[in-house]
Length: 376
Image (cartoon, rainbow, N blue to C red; front, side, top):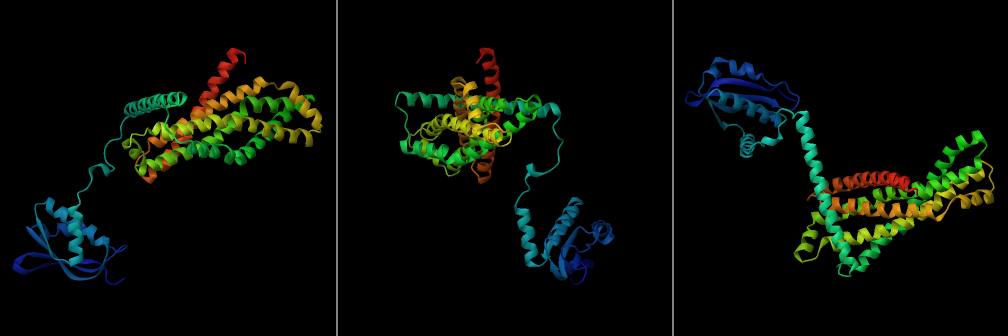
């Protein structure tokens, strides 16, 4: 860095007071004190000031910021500023900065809304979300009704592709998670059952837990993170590219062409994934029972078969079907609500996963209460 930045006050042409800038006006340099400069009688009493290049060695945005502040203070006092003596680049950048007005909504000022105002705004947002979801459910129900009477317009090949993505391609992750859940259930149960010498009942715990609850729940959570987010991202990208607008222009219902195949695919695949998850979870529990609790394979599977009936599987399959529909609704809803930017697509995918998991847990709680009341 060369000389330090400075300002020489001198009388210029036609008696105008000049502020001659000298030195290197770069980041990190010690700038002249603005208050001291403005309090100088020569500057304070001058109705017109001329900014001039008195030997500027180097400059960057620091110079522009300083000059903007200096001009604002001079104009506040009723004076005028002449930039004719500045370097051409500096003068152009200052003019460009003035040409773009400052946005009023980007400042950090303003009082923060109170608690009541924030709570009211949150309630209004929740009401709008509920209204949008109910409207979407109505449109989805109408599309499904058209499908039942054979009037829905969508391609069978699209349904087949979504079925493949929701079914066979999801088997590896469902296998891994289900086996681990079965192992965890067996370990948790073994800690307590060993105190009473009742290790054989590990088979009951794992089988009933997987068939009635954990198989459907874990498969649904996996599909919410895997497929629900994919649905939201796909439809969100179509919103960004205005493809959904093109469907509407052509008279094709996006609900029938895009949403309906995804709802059908998840509703059909989730029961099968649930049964597969049940089997993998039971095998995971068998690994603990056979290799760690010294239960013979025949004993373990006989105990499982004795205490497990089709009603337990029916409960899990019913839950899985409902969960699949909820996941499809959450993913498609967020995708259709997506904005017109790449950031909006990411937010839609994230929101779809969160909404789907919340809906799954709430529905599972409702089913638990209803099944208890009904004695199922």
